Length: 313
Image (cartoon, rainbow, N blue to C red; front, side, top):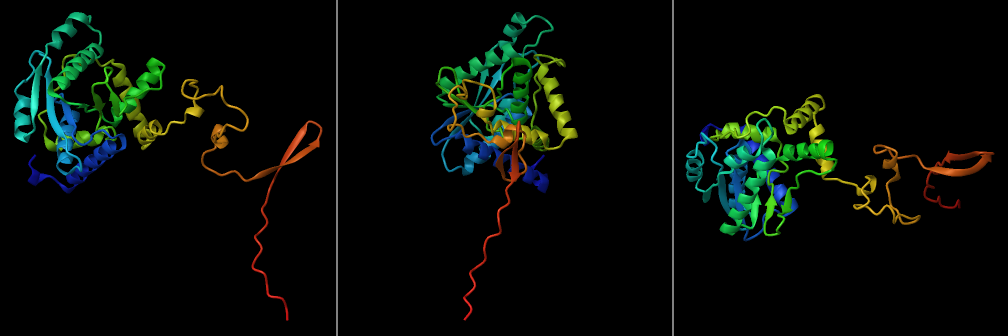
């Protein structure tokens, strides 16, 4: 689709995605002056959108940073190796195509019928980190969006026994690079709409086949069904990931429960009992009225006295 045929709705969507991405970058200090950002492209809708948004933000950002687009050619049979170089040339971004035969390793190591995602992602990650080092890139941008983060949270909750998701920003294990997820605030449905309008040359990942029984797909379907029956639930879940209250969980490494003592704890008692909406009427202790009975009574404030009247002459 050419620029002249885009609708007003498209430009509103584009502005929204750029705004959300810019807000995430600012909130987590993802990109700073002088950074070189390696933008990882898979050929899917998310990474194409990420590159387009970052290129747009680069033009008007208050800081100067460099973008290098990267695609990892994993030597999958039938992979259309010409598509991404042609696209990247057309948009005028610096880019590099990295050849690494991870496909044969995955096929050799993973038994037929088993999921390949775990090994494939580990191999990709190693190649990406090495490429970033060779190119002098201190930031690595991945195309994960808000829904990916939420789905990862439930995967870890249901199958890993951990309250853990995808962080919008993290340091690599060797401490040499920072991985960022600029689309962390962007819903997948908006990215999909934008990608359709932009008519990106999408390259599907067929290394793993359909793998319909992947747990991630099941979790995605669950979250989508929640959103269909309760619109806005996904927004609330993501908001919860950004508003954690350690004192109301049960991780003794995260909160010093053993150190709690009378006079030290400052806990919102109302939330302990599920009261989050209404303010309680003040009650005062009336004492022990009968044996085995204590009583609290409503405390009503008296109306404030009005201004003093002048004394009668």
